[in-house]
Length: 367
Image (cartoon, rainbow, N blue to C red; front, side, top):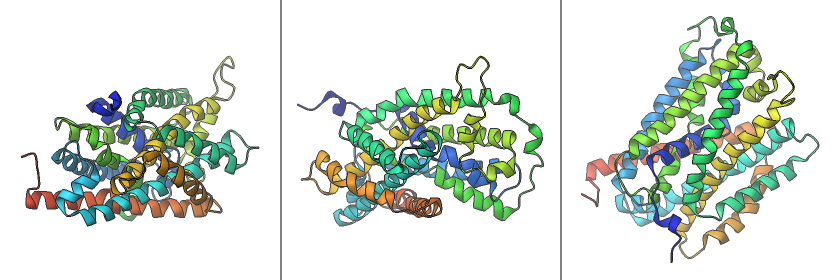
């Protein structure tokens, strides 16, 4: 008898929370630094909106493709749209993309955790512990991971808002000036980097197996991206207003430094950044366990005779080794860039082409 969790579908609220949580992930720490490199003052807000607009477009496309085949996974969609062989190729590409994503995140988490929390603990140990936690979470039901966002995401948003509120005294409007001084090329470059930060919405192509009703699915996915856009905007403006564009440009993790700036009267929290990081790690766990889960779902849809648990055990050491390959932060950035470009092609462009084929052929087995 199947677990009751597997028989149930996910609600619109769960879709919004899952998409938002998946998108913000690690990028919430690094985005301000990335944007101010090619823009002047606070003009990066334009790039956030432009990149967000592109992300909303692809979120709409992914939503439309999903509702065309309610209750189907990505492999099944491609099989019906093109053929089974192409479904294998595209699904395996998706799996590779998400596995590389998880490897990068494991390394990123270990690096920043050692930098701000456990400076005497080797990155290899921190990464291994984080990976073991991901393995523990991934062996459970997929729908349980989706529903975990109902618990984690509101807490994370509350902590971010609290962090910004506690820094309101350091908010300097003059750091946001002058406006509209960035050139067109700089805005476009920043918009490209911002687009990478919106990758993650594509998880719905696989969690679509739990979406049994068409109504509200596309709008829920789009709303999830819009929530992320608003969070990015508020965080970026606060970072620039508090530190200024020059400091933000030379600070690898501006939001983390913003947490270190917090001073609460009475000494309630002597190190607020420790509290912030503990909550933020909840987001990273949720983001990465979903990415790991989606990669495994993709592989099990191709290799149907291999169990989910077996695949997780096989993949875990591979992910760990790949995460250790970059020797420094520069190589880690290059690695992240490769993954981002791969995501744009595999997770956004190809589904868009599939939707075009669907509209041309009117492939919809439910009509």
